[in-house]
Amino acid sequence: MSGNLIEVRGVSKSFGGVVANKGVSIDVAEGGITGLIGPNGSGKTTLFNSIVGYHPIDEGSIQFKGREISKLRVPEIARLGLLRTFQQTRIYSKMDCMKNMLISVSHRDEGLGTMFGSMRDRETEEFAEELLEFVGLYQKRFLIAGELSFGQQKLLEFAMALMNRPEVLLLDEPTAGINPTLINGLIDRLKRANEQFGITLFVIEHNMRVIMNLADRISCLAHGELLATGTPDEIQNDPRVVDAYLGAH
Ligand SMILES: Nc1ncnc2c1ncn2[C@@H]1O[C@H](COP(=O)(O)OP(=O)(O)OP(=O)(O)O)[C@@H](O)[C@H]1O
Ligand SMILES: [Mg+2]
Image (cartoon, rainbow, N blue to C red; front, side, top):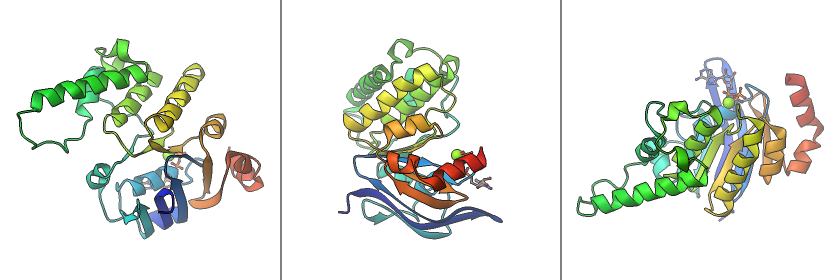
């Protein structure tokens, strides 16, 4: 084993005439927190979509635990333990938090028979409660999700992803739009999910303070291509990265 859970090699993806990713190669180390940065439109979300099987890639290879997954689709990849959250939060805004948690469990265990059904349901509910406690939403578990603040909705979405016990979680801008005072709490939860639950994280983030504090390795995309990969220190001091950001903002 190389120590990488995900290996992206030479991946290209175009939409009509728009080249969103071009020859991108990135490793996601097992047990670590890998960051992905880059100006708006540099192809970060496209790369996530390619990894989770949302759309086929044009060229290249994507391996998860040494297995080629670039021809698989979303449900098959999710079953392998690779999940993502979205830039625009996807929760069921008319349901309460508990229902959101329960509905987000994949149904891979269905068909095992009904004898243990109710016991399994109770275990699932307890796990949902534990996770809501973990993200600080336990008191709000019967509140309609649409009435939560945006930051709390992001925490709920994170907890919903954890319901499926992922091995790797891809987070697309987890702190975007969150009140600065809630951001530290979220960073803390992400680190604990990594350290205590052993979940490998791959995180897209625009907030430099957040990603420098969170990730142990960071890759930077610009115009769909990989510009640099390194430690937070190396990336922060890389003139190409600084230029890409200053040029775009
Ligand atoms: N489904 C699509 N159809 C057409 N063009 C697309 C599609 N998805 C992405 N693109 C284009 O691909 C390029 C990369 O977009 P992408 O969303 O991956 O960037 P991003 O780095 O995630 O940007 P942001 O930081 O704004 O979220 C952009 O030019 C975008 O308009
Ligand atoms: Mg994006």
